[in-house]
Length: 304
Image (cartoon, rainbow, N blue to C red; front, side, top):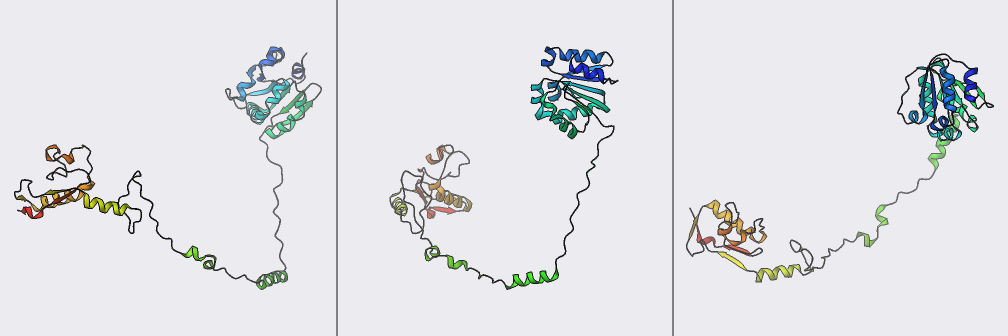
């Protein structure tokens, strides 16, 4: 007769039982022998260990009078990381005063009793010869019996010692404050001179030369101003006087002013009115190239 059968025979418990095993214990016949011995006196539910550990099976609370666990030594060792949650699951599934049997133990007998106690079980017996531990679920949840931690009272300080301490503290020399200005050198206080970065024709061009430019950009702008092309709008391009409203005159002046910075999404704004759309801001200006300066002969325009 196996160890599991011996424990069951010597500790008959009435009520539904839970038998937990593995493929290893089923292949060597020990698990089937345990289930057969239990089914002779009660209803037995059978579950594999991995299903309970992975959470695929949830035990009904307080539904079993006894639980029987039969594993190999290696399986007991591999259960160690999940032992506390596994025992808590079994504790919930057992009814009050339900019995837990851990069977076919060898070296695990030494560490399991403390784990069972921490999980809420009460150890009934440790059968080292038969390799079994029998534990019981208490009839009611366990309450802590440890005394409350005492808080030490604060000792009163001798007034004479307190006065001596204050006197010692007040008589200690106070170091002079350090002037932060004294930490700065003349080089730290000197204002840095603005440095103009060297101008490069390959790099993106800055918008405008800075004041006191030394990189050559100011000279380049002056050269472009002198040699750049100017498009002159003398009224109506035919030499005749153009009669426009004051608002149209202001619009044309603003358009001519913004012409050097003109951008075009359609690519036709620079080609003249024949190529411009109806809402083009450069309507009325002659054809010009981007960057060219456009001037308007204000005297050739008469206001209405």
